[in-house]
Image (cartoon, rainbow, N blue to C red; front, side, top):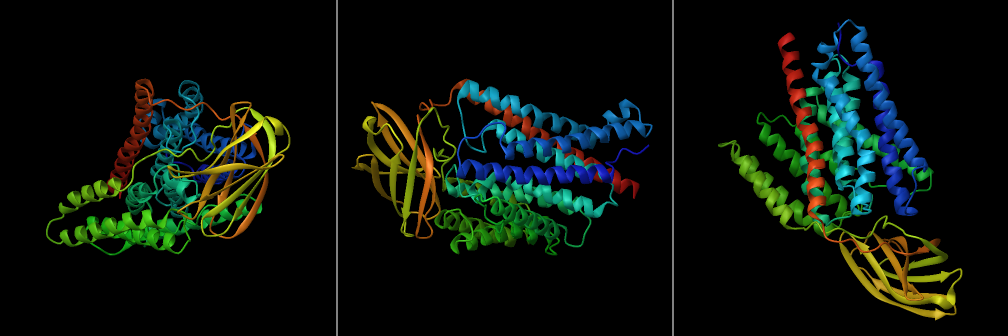
Length: 475
């Protein structure tokens, strides 16, 4: 009787996970470059197909366990398999939950939406289950699954790395660091190599490099390389104290994020990242020194880091990405002339309805910040406006007009780092109605969905610890 995940099925699930990661970044690029999509777009089909491959591998794992002679009761008592199955079902359930969420509370476009986070948390738990269920002899496969686990966990900040931050950029490191340290702790116990975290983060970085190359070949926007994530490799430093390794991992990640943003190798705003990185490095250093006498001091230091870093930014939603385009009105040639120093001149040339249109304003949005400028009619069917933005990077620049008194708009994603001219044919559409404040029903529903996802992570931690103890007992 053998209940462990067969290596062949493990590799199938890993390939499905890698395909899902590529599809996620492809879908993000699709939203950035094109806008609202449909169920049948290529990124969606790849994502659903990749998830189906992983889900089928888990289902066959259960069939294989029963075929090995184990009773149904025995199979249902095997934590990794049960967790993988429950997590897979949660991933599937997230699709109708997301549809119901949009029907009840309106469209949203942020990764931190409760239904979106359920997918992320549930798939992270499923990878934890696979890692716990693999044989200890499958070292290479365990490292591959751990690399996917790292990628899945740090995907909570992928909008920042894709240059489409939906919330204040001061939140980037306070979210990235706990997620990465959580996986690094798992990796140190589950991947039996000399420098397990280093191997895993380098493997993840190589996978992200392939993702970027694939998007480049498809002519889509590419995300940053995960430079900051490499800092978690400091968890492999030969410190006897776990708390010192955690402090080293946090400080190294913050330092690399700071360097990457300062040199333009990463999209998050250098000012926001440097402010938080300074706090994290300083407190990590204090915690590192404090553990020489009192290991519990790291707990107080961690609280200080969290409070200080979170206090530097507020979670204001940004109406900037995938804005929920409404009914199409007319196509227009929209041209952004960028001077490389933050000034953008936007020209809009609609293909019709000229006598019905009146200019309103130009709007630039990024990470909760909104900047407006004047839009003027400069020809029979030409509208022009200029706007200056204080931060370089990708901004979503809107032209807002009126058609016989009704609002219409169109938008372009504009990278302001280099002088360039960006002409594109875009759709002018009726914008969605303004969203109301969060209702009690929405807050309760969102809280329950988040609780379900976090519950799967807790279950993953319990299962991992139990399987590790069993392995040590048998050894």
